[in-house]
Amino acid sequence: MTNANAPTAVYPLAPLPASALEGVRRRRIAALGLDLIFVTVLSVGLWLLLGVLSFGLLWFILPPLFPFVAFFYNGLTISSWRLATPGMRAMDLEMRLVNGERVPFLYAAVHAVLFYLCWTFPPIFLFSLLSADKRCLHDMLAGVIVLRRV
Image (cartoon, rainbow, N blue to C red; front, side, top):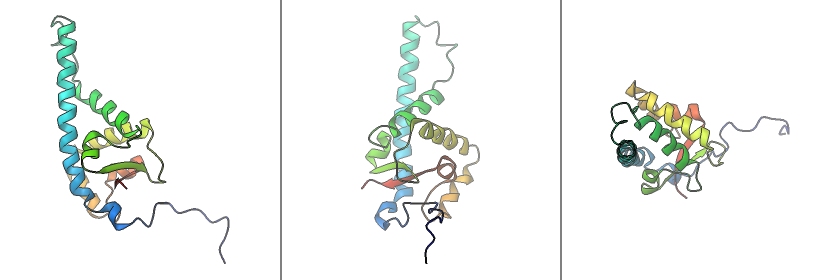
């Protein structure tokens, strides 16, 4: 006999088909490389544009733009209707909340901040080797999962 008031599963997408997680780690690494190139190009372009518009006066006092660009790049692209950054789309990946819904801007941006914070102690990324659904620690803290596009 089942209890109608029983709590729902913590991970409503389970069980995931094997194809949803096939090659996710390898694809995420490739997507990261592409996205880092995109963010770097955007950051340098924005830095040059702001410098030229200020006749070079701001070039020496502009704050590092990379963190700001990365924050909005991740937040805006993942919360868009495509559910992925351009690098993730190229690698056939998408990000969703663990309940299967699309990721709001704030969750996606917080995920980016947590990701870059994890770089201060890279062995944290090995946590995904212990996770059955191939989620990294920053994915779990942000409440998201990266899946193959279906």
